[in-house]
Image (cartoon, rainbow, N blue to C red; front, top):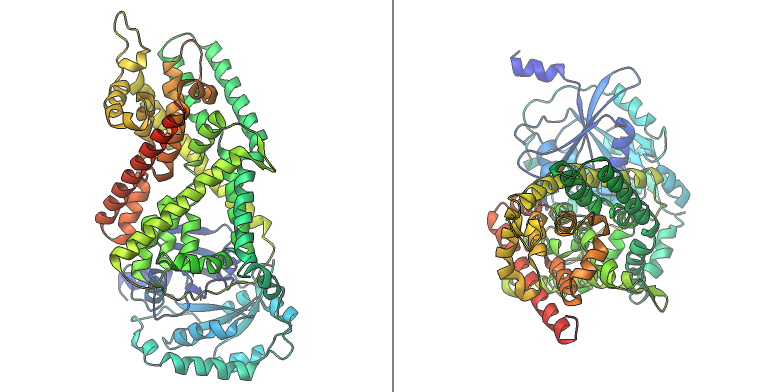
Length: 626
């Protein structure tokens, strides 16, 4: 036995979890592994790879791999191609699984069994996990598990992935399963050797033999969908939900934001009073506290936005929204399937770009990637919130908050612009509309644990960025804004004569026609690393531009007194289209396999941003906003 073979034999057996989207596969993976998970990317791609470990009742150590969801091994998307290659042992550097656990939704066997039959042709050891059996029983669906096992020629166990202990039958079955490390890769020709029509006929035969739907009472989801998916009521409900979300971002966040602002002010005053005048005091008070504190205050608004997105995702509404928008998006050359990547982009453009890989048509996938950054990501929210709070009165217009209304309008402008760009790209590239094939999962109450984990993960990512990237950039910006010092007889603040001041004045030549002064130009540069850095940068710049102990945690009043309304509106328009951060452009390059599309994205978004700001600024000046 060779060294490589000995190493493989010494490792615990690897079980691959495989199934359709929305079958409960990932919930079962979490139930099996708990905190014993590691997440990385497959080599060469940005598709997530989740592996964990667990111990069977006998003490047997096992590893489990959560593969991307797939409807068929005849891959139509990059996700399905990864799943196919891993299962067949064809992916370089990736161990082939010793066995496959195929997870199926007991309420939707007709769709799920096609994948089971395809995997069976590869000749791998298999086990079927019949998940959501509790929901199937409530609906009156009767499934003869023993007969299903006989028809498929493999063990079948019942699981309820969302319940504690719902995985026990699976654990016991895996304990009894002989697991040997596979040899050569499995040929994929066996999958395509059987026509799809024949596979579907076999699925119907198995269902007729093993399942009875005579007493199927249907489910509440179908009754709810009669309203939610109604051609008239559905879009109204969707628009109302989006409007409520943006109103809540301002109204719910007011108290925690005031608390954070007061705390930052108190810390700044305490440290400022304890240190003597000099570079160290300026670095800590004007650089770190003013910059980082100016960004940290917007954490409540970001979490509120994510809370609503997670609730809509977890309860099963998002695929319905994709269905509702399919016709409208089809008019600009997109499938309704693009809705979920675009909605993900409201959190961050990076997961939105990555989620586009679920779109089958290559042209639709590319267009979705190119317009995803036009969705207003959470990094823009601190900039919007700062300017809106400083220039838009906090008053009610009828029953709505005016500031929330302006925020809603900015989000809507990004969406409308994305549809316009998609329409233009469709006209240039040709191609018709593709029909939307989408599984609608049953509605269910959001899981509190899932919501809490999702919010904690978003807070952790934001705080990590504040404590690493933003802090580093603020210190660098403070240094560039403080040296060299002002010359003898200087009439301007010291920052005016610094390296950052010179760079800002040089850029102001380009941005002066859209109303941006040299202070704003300084903030735009670090904002290329992460958009929310622009707020911290403005805090540092104005702290160093001010006199005495003026600090950037009073940044709103400072810019309200320094900018015209035309400049404020111009900067809002700029950030609707602001060129993407470097991290997003790098992901676009990886997902498309070409730097060309990353450069195209940066170029067209800069052009749109400049044009929108120029028009906004000139119209505002003409209306007396100067």
